[in-house]
Image (tube, rainbow, N blue to C red; front, side, top):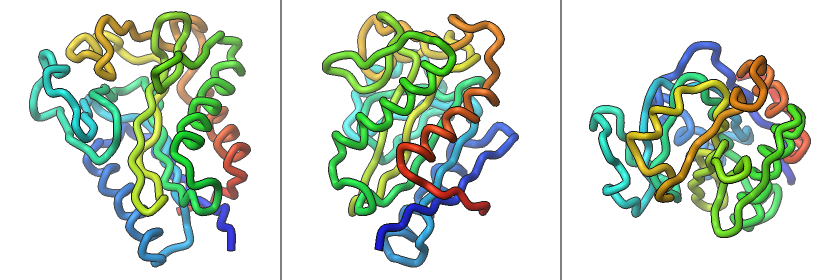
Length: 213
């Protein structure tokens, strides 16, 4: 039976990365062990933190306090989370959709592109890379994990964050990668407005019914 129901969690406060990581793992584990039929979507902001995926090159950490670095179970290189950046985690059972990680990554890019288009921001994919770009600057990053076709982690969109934090790393392992944010293009857009559009796009693209936790 196809399950298209997901718990939606969207805290108002800035969240600790480590706590939310544990929350994701719980929902992934419950889905794998069939202790729950609920998928899980988390949309919020993190305190300053740097995350590195499996097999990442530690040389891409340039000048980062070790206390703010987390090695996590996802693909991809180092990235940065902070207030003013919208972070979205999707714990989805791809058995309900398509057991194809390339399809899933392109679907996430499509959601981001459609979100930015709502604000009349021109953006696109970039050949050979995962994520979304505005001309030659990266505005959104994607990093996922997957176990038994149940996904983990997701994507982030820079809305009104301090881009200086990215200078402490080589973002996504891409040398001379410049980052940008929505406020560079649309001065009055709020993170709440972006969040509302993202929710609608996720709900539409994955045909989800949201329920409260």
